Image (cartoon, rainbow, N blue to C red; front, side):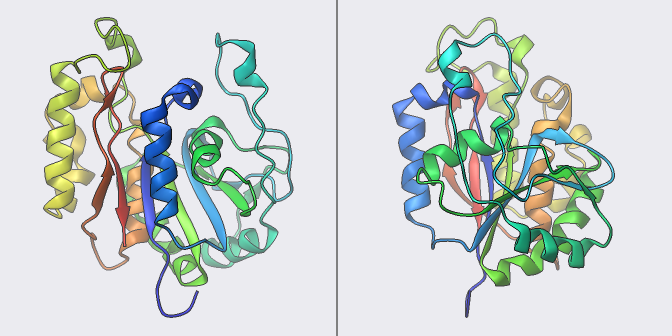
Length: 258
């Protein structure tokens, strides 16, 4: 890509039934329609933690259906995107030695949103593991990946802005009123991002309201820090919120840097 760096995204990816939500799928498709076609896509998903940094398959292999108890048709979804061996080589140059998982396909944190955003599956996709859940380490990882933007690579951190499935029993449907803890955390995160308060974001477990309820385990917020680092290697870039609102009480806030 000449002249302009590719943007960086953090998106809330939803569960497989996201495909049945016409509002959200439409929002994702419309978002993709505003983006310049990337040369490749690098995804960091909440659903792959592995140390050291590990690269997924660089050829097209079956998806990882990393969920349980859903109707059978969700396990028949395919997304045969081209592999991205050239992108993998560039990642290795930036990060140094990394591990490889040649048989690991895209997990649902990657393919569920990509099916809606790039339905033709014609852009090469590579998935990268999170080697840690430490916000500062992930921010630094993002900073090291930032030069890929100048190659037209779309970097996507895929999580969920609030994520506590056990605390959602009181939300009856996808349009239900969010619980207080989810709304408070979402509002705080929006203000911290729009205000460029990197210190607060990195220390969100102590600074954010209801942080332990919003993220009992932080893997769904953690990809945001890779996106933050990749967005601005010199500090924080203030993003634009592209999608907001709630799905079964969870904040689906999704943002674009650049």
